[in-house]
Image (cartoon, rainbow, N blue to C red):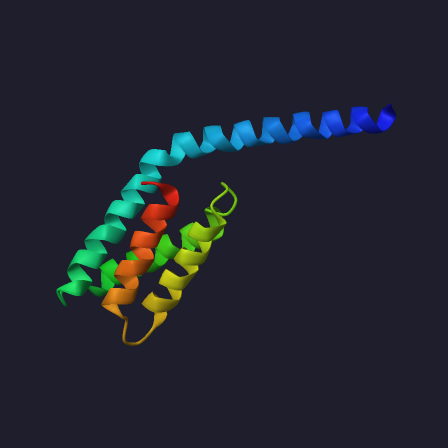
Length: 112
């Protein structure tokens, strides 16, 4: 009986934690969308060969933040795609197609 109570208590804590994470995700959704839009802008400019260093640094910052946070919110694949994006952006000769594919994969993973 004590064991089933412990399982029930753990389930309740897990459910409460998930609800809190979901609430944090919803509160931050406008920021997440804004970051995705900035990545989209970077993709647009880099595929045309006109991306600035500032845009690249912004994209690297966003990729770093996504790689560290998306898994916490239940999107481990999104974190992996963001890590891939981060590596691509760190390259001395960034691959525009690879960058576009990584950003698209993040969009798809997040359904945004």
